[in-house]
Amino acid sequence: MKNESDQERADRNFVELLQGARVAVTGVQVLFAFLLTVPFSTGFARMDQADRWLYFAALLSAAVASICYIAPTAQHRVLFRQGRKETLVRRSNLYGIAGALALVVSMTTSTMFVIDYLFEATLAWVTAGLLAAFALWTWFGQAALDRQDGSGDGPAGDAPDDEGRSEDAESLDRRG
Image (spheres, rainbow, N blue to C red):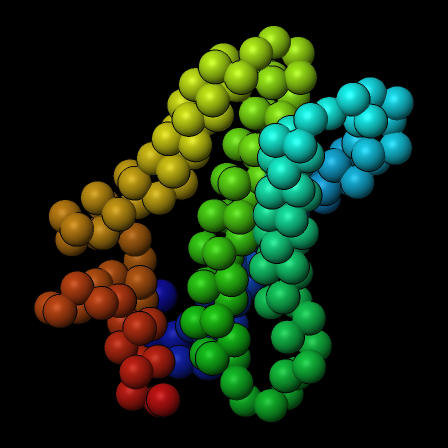
């Protein structure tokens, strides 16, 4: 969007960030809800200490993911009409990345928790490792390689400048 102002670009970027978060939030909420019910099942009492720690990691990381994905909306309410949209966009992007990392941990440890209960620890570790590697590659690895090649195929307002930063990042640096 070549003719958009900095404010219009910040508005568009914030809407895009929220759209992306909506997809993840639903999955996080379902996983978190499932995890909240697990200790109340009859089989939980038979869990050994290692499985309880695994469960703790899954539950805590689901809570962190939920907080990270909800933070941009909550902060938008607090900062409404304060002229801080670009700050909110930059911060929301970081929360989105942190939320995705926490979600990888929660999905991996939840899967490991269930597989360990159903089968054995070795299968649980192997499966969790493969899931973590797959998620990290598809969510972050491919994108990191795309950033490095610098060819860019998006609209001009998101294209990298000569230093490899996007115009959005450059305008945010200028404004503080």
